[in-house]
Image (cartoon, rainbow, N blue to C red):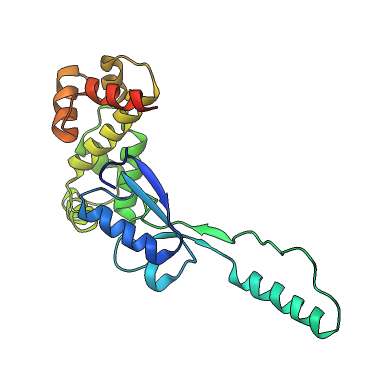
Length: 214
């Protein structure tokens, strides 16, 4: 898992395996879902909801399966032959939770702040801008971030900027200076310092290594 190129999404065969995967990712220090998004199957709430982060899962539509099985049983009991071909049924729906949704947090104010940060990560926003966007005090929002995200607001701003920068470095031919500007940095030197501090490599090296593997 540590060797996989991130960000990455994993679909597990069931919710139990999804829980194993996300626990292993967290033990490696990988952020879920920002670096390692996980989806399970069966939507077993006992497994999906606890502990945090809750796991997104595909509802396989067992009620529909049961209804179809009941109809088939009626058919057999009436003496009619079953169909010669298997009956295929589509899954129900995806139930999104924290393992795939960066904004799926228990606190509505933190979720509102995260959505603002994500939407404005291309601008040179500061903590004050985030606080002004959320209808609670700076002190309260700071405490909520620590409780829900275990990180300060400015760290979340930096994280979203770096995720945006990594995508632009790999998916576009923009110059490093242009990437810096597109991620809210007015100084390319500052951008390179923050990138190297958070990613343990320079933007140039990050691009070279990832683009070469595409």
